[in-house]
Length: 442
Ligand code: ASP
Image (cartoon, rainbow, N blue to C red; front, side, top):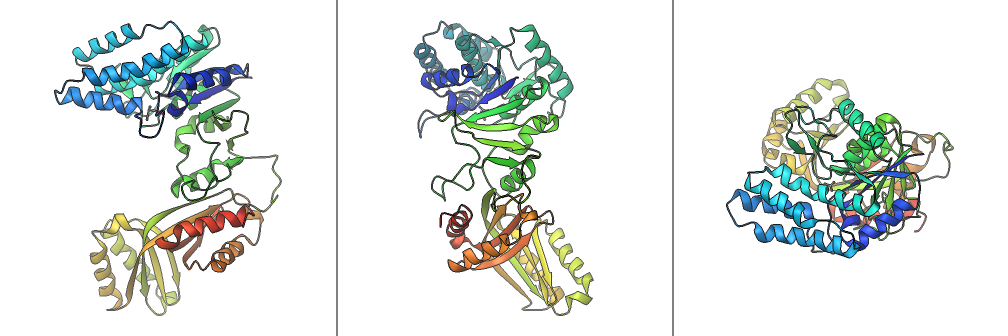
């Protein structure tokens, strides 16, 4: 049994948090490969090391004295090393960084030192081998990952080590040998690559939340974590604005059929959230429930009233052409005998709305078009929907009973979600009402 673990910045923000990580790693003999982020915020208002490193580079770039900024970063690491009571030569690490800066080191190198030092300290503290992502994670020229080369390098490094390694997340090597960063939050990708390379049994992604939550915690108080979620459901939720692990970042483990578990460093024994392609042991149509609820504000509804649309499908094409020529992406489309409705993202059509409306009125006549702004979309996502009847009924009655007016309705053909549109002013209330309904709290 082999588990690959990734710890996010908030789980590495201080010596105490490093200690918790060590307890977690040592609690299970299968936890033999660890990927770390750079230290994050210790408290609200604190700074993430990665952000400080970007700021440090900005100083260098604009010719402003950067020494205090670098010192601040060094102090953060020194505090961790001293707090852990390990012997780790932080001075010479920073001398090396300072030296590289004086030789004109690029931004990606400087910012990568956040993860690099985090991993070196963690390796010393756990007594695991340090494996540098530089020379083990390889990018293609377009910055996509060369998976074959990366997997080979990770496998070799793991086998050559004592079977216990720590790897820094977030960076790798370009084909020309230069160091390059991934996008922000990229340590999730490094963890997924390592898990796929080592054919791990599970990829544990450790954060400071109890898993993927059923609803946005800034709207619903202490929402339940989702015990199990399929990748396609995760995609629906992230598309609708849920701030969780992006499913693209775990593509390597998805392709390899390795399950992902989101775990909470503050509550390590809690089950967290399991993400998988399928749950074959799950009974079809088990208990009636929703996997999660997510939504976004800021949509615009354009209604076109036009008689006898059923016999005039060409007119729809002309209307879509108007959207296309204005560069507007269509979020939803519904049509009936007497007209049709477009749902668009407001910030994408703010400039073009007048041109779209006048184009449509030219086609369908003065007064045929009405525009409603400030509409929110809320998606109720559930893999059970396809087996259950009555979910949409429950959604509508719950909202109706609470005087939330529904402006639009749509259900994907895959029956994975039901998405409703409400006024922005009703958004929070609607999310809360739906959450209560499906967790049977209300
Ligand atoms: N430290 C980097 C960031 O803040 C990468 C990561 O944490 O995954 O984005």
